[in-house]
Image 1 (spheres, helix red, strand yellow):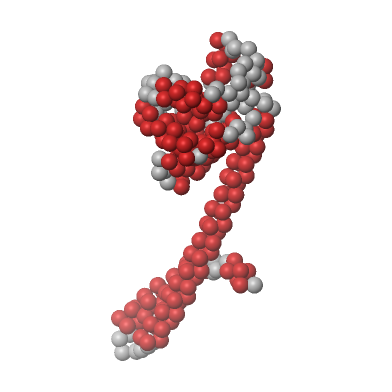
Image 2 (image 1 turned 90 degrees about the vertical axis):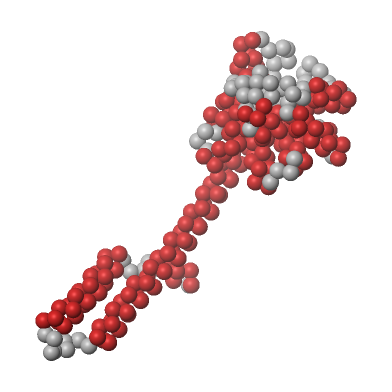
Length: 277
Ligand SMILES: [Fe+2]
């Protein structure tokens, strides 16, 4: 009942304008009467003042009610927008994970990359908001592979130059697929640049060092680790000591040394990150 009361619209703007006009009219009429008939008291000052105060007070209350109503509508809109964003995100995530599940060699890859990337972000002391962005970017980082033919994605042999060129477009395609989703602005940047290299020899834009968004550099370490720690059609997962050595070797060329160091520390603290399920 109380909620219904709140929703009831206040006085219309036309009615309020009429009231303002009435206040002006009363005031000018009173001033005119004083000047024109100084000896005759048409309306006493007290009565006029009281009337004007009542009208102004009424308008003020209406404005407060309007403001409260607008705030309630605004909050409801923000809530609805968040729910819509969550629904869009859940749909896209399902699409990525379903696509991934078709290939036994990459099944679970996005979740594992995300798990490692969040761990690195915590290790680097990033804030909750940044960790959330990295989490979403991690789950969606390979969304650009959706639409690439299974013949290329699941090819057991080495890819030829043409096929490799198609695969290399996936970071850019991923950012393009997500382009309509305004709320994923920073995630899109991370997705676009997760295959850049510190030395500038990566793709798609050849960014180097600090030009590459921090989240993308974190994803690159997590992605590289999971690729080496996963089975492929042509090889078993690499041994742990080889993976650690490869990560160290990639410092300063492919990967950001500060992030690799943080990740190697994390692996010591959380050996469960080696698990592939
Ligand atoms: Fe990728």
